[in-house]
Structures are given as structure tokens and as C-alpha cells.
View 1 (tube, rainbow, N blue to C red):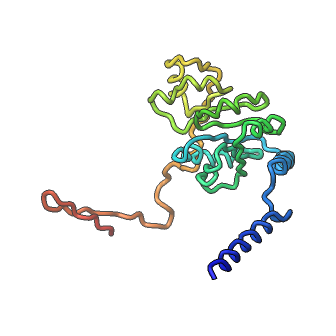
View 2: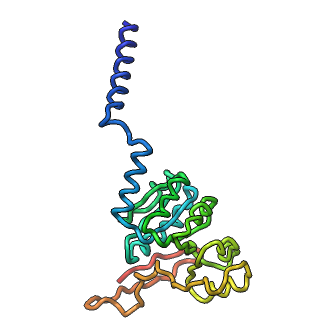
View 3: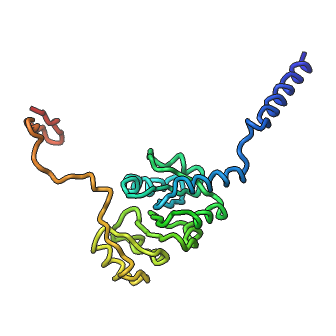
Length: 225
């Protein structure tokens, strides 16, 4: 009985393997994928992209630029280097390509892609900076007075895009090799959807809250009215 069961399981596994080896069931080979990618580049004709590489916890650095990227004119694309990062990118309509190998990455040189935005520095950034047909702009993922906001590595990019004159001055004072002419002030695109206060909505009474004093060391919840 045990021998028959073992034989049946072995035959079932062999059958499943043979089915996966059928021409219509096999995963696409590397050459097939590369041919498809070249065809897609020629058909979509991307013009601007977001390049990102990093660890799983760093995906927020790319996600904060998804909406500004989608609002740009032209045909945007997101270029990733790690496969796991595809699952970390927030929902977006912008096409995503994952190019782990340097040889595959270099195929972008012969595409219509002209600008790549870089929200962070990584060990693999130097690989894409080799492509001379693409202009590279460092956009960072936030600005402050910490040293990383005027990193000497920024001089490796064609341009450094910053929020305003404070960041321009920060690079000038740091003397890290970033020329003033390469610094471009673009504001903070993530805040474009925020509108100045223009009063309460028309036809609605603004909410009012009162707060009752409580005993020492206690807090009394506010009561809306």
C-alpha cells in the first residue's frame, strides 16, 4: 500500500513538471523578456523617470514623489533595481520596470528617456549615472539642516533640485562641490494640492467646541455643539 501511494505521488509530481515544460506554460526566458522590453520602450517612448534603489524600509522616499511624477508632462516611468521593491511602491498609474542587471539597465541609453529623478543616493546609483543620454537630477526626499541635505555626492548629478533659496544657500555654505548654477529651485511639488484657507465652506455653520475644566491632573473631553 505504501509503495503504491509513493509511486502515485511521484507520477503526479512528474506530470505536473511535464505540464509546466509545455511551450505555452514555460516562463519567458531572459532573451524573450529583453525583446519584449525593447519593444515596450519603442512603443511607450518614456520621456522622464524616477530611479530608485534601496532597502525595504526606504520605499517612502520614492513614494513621496509618485504624484508629482504622474503630473509631469510626457510619458513617465519608474525604474527600480530590486524585485522586492515593486511590492513596496504605493499605488500608481505610472508604469514600473525592474532592472536588476546593469546590462539590462544600459538598454535605457538607446531609449527616448531623457530625464531621471533621484530621490536618494544608493550604491547602485553610480551605475545609471553612466548613461550619457539621460540628464540626472537629484530631488532628495526631504530637506533640513542635517548634513545629508548637502551631501557631497550630490555633485555627481547634472542638477540638484531643491525647495527654495535656503537649500541653495545650504549647498553654498557647505562647499561640497555643487555649483550654484546646477541648483534649481522647484518648490515642494507634494504640497501643490494644498490650498490657502479661504474661510468656512459656503452654506455651513463652522463647528464649535467647548472645553470644561476638570479636576487637577485630569482632562475633560471637549464637547462639540
